[in-house]
Figure (cartoon, rainbow, N blue to C red):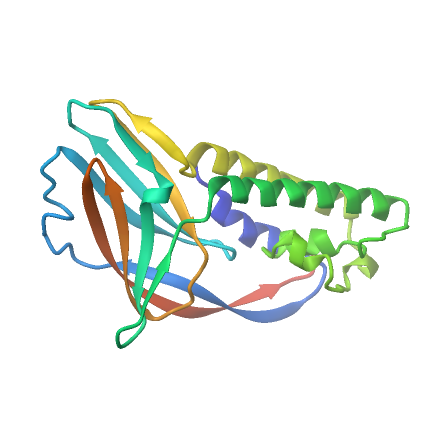
Length: 238
């Protein structure tokens, strides 16, 4: 079960400060299928559908469902997918998915930084900046970015051990999620189906967009309306 997008909400409740912040999130609403040969009338018996999953702060995610009804094996490759965006006039933005290995590497780095900080905090000699990495992970920020940002969390009268356990569990579950669901490159045998997730950096645009997928010598495109929304998040004391 894909629960990683719900972790941020639950974990934010354990932060020690009480404050409101407004963040910008990218939404995407799938538009009605245009019914052309590139999309829902393939001639190769490979059927593909997509759905927008949500904004996980550092990336937005689309689910790709592939049904190989053909008599041949097919390759499904994240490098054959793109997010195209019309931003006005003749300008067009083009984004490739974030590589699965890059996501895994970032999470492994967070895990290592978190462990280093935990040890430093336990010995009261935090050279990284006492609980900054922890606070960043719990609030959905990137650990590498939060290392240099001063937080007020080290002075909070909150159970450090519990907070580290929550953060470590969050990173480990996110790693497990990407290992299982995030698309890299797979082969689908005849008569089989596959469900995969692809991720893009949030463009933070109000624009028309398309997910373009090249698979089995065909091009499939799926129209979306991108919309930026603001959301207030409140951190509460326990």
